[in-house]
Image 1 (cartoon, rainbow, N blue to C red):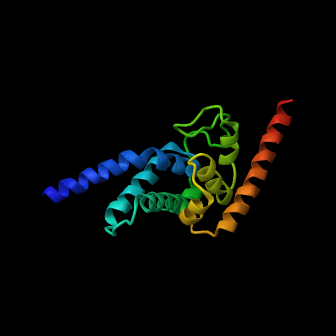
Image 2: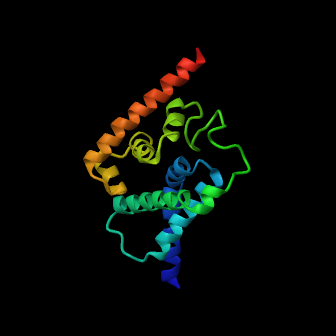
Length: 170
């Protein structure tokens, strides 16, 4: 019984530490609050079910981020998700898009959220979660060169989106 209490306390501490960060990662991919909450819950459930020992805090954090991103990708490519229409306005129709726990007037973040997932995740992890290129490569299971290329191309796409928006405002 004591062991069960200790395990539950560890899970509570884990959720308190990583919940906001995982929610931002999930929201950046899902563009929907309810889906992002479901993804974070599923990531924590998978962590609890997976009784493998975690080597370090960095490994634990990377595992949770990687699992969150994989769950998002699984949902987004499912036939159910492709055939459903949300009840609320979609991200494309919304003028003000922001991640919870972030600044509301962050035009760069809005542009990042519009990018394809292979640019969006590295850019988000690099600029908004302060991950290094090496850490992103580890989390996404990609080579460092691939991450550098995606960061560069993603920045170019963000620049295009922001310049198009500023020209449209004139």
